[in-house]
Length: 186
Image (cartoon, one colour):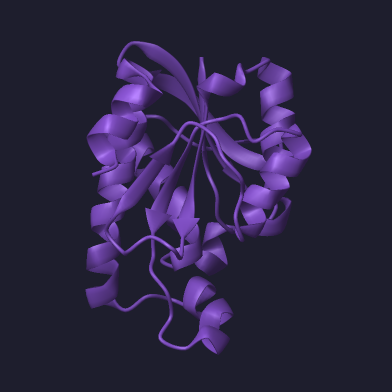
């Protein structure tokens, strides 16, 4: 069984923000594979289904970004998820908009949501997909850049990354992390 987590903030207030790229990817997967992400548990919304014949759980933490690890750890522990089958998807300012990076493991960098996940799981040894959002024009504007609403023309570029990340998740589930890194890290 795979656990696919889309990091972000609760959608009511943070839909269409750069910080919710992970949530957008989970929404894309939910639509594509007809998985209702509506059960309220593990401090998040989740749903179960299949991708490529494999059972999956889609999880959208509702804890706000900085406490995402609470939701992820509860779900991992409840379902006894092998951490090789945990895929965390999140936004990345160091990757260009429309691009993604697939990693088998690694540190959280400056991302507070990933810092929370790594801290609560007490390991960096799990796959992740970083969805590029790029850098703000002015460094002082970082908070507004990541949680502010995105203009339509900018969101079109971000949609490319969302689509690629959803495809990469499916690829990992079907063919493994190494194959996904070879295919998507170009």
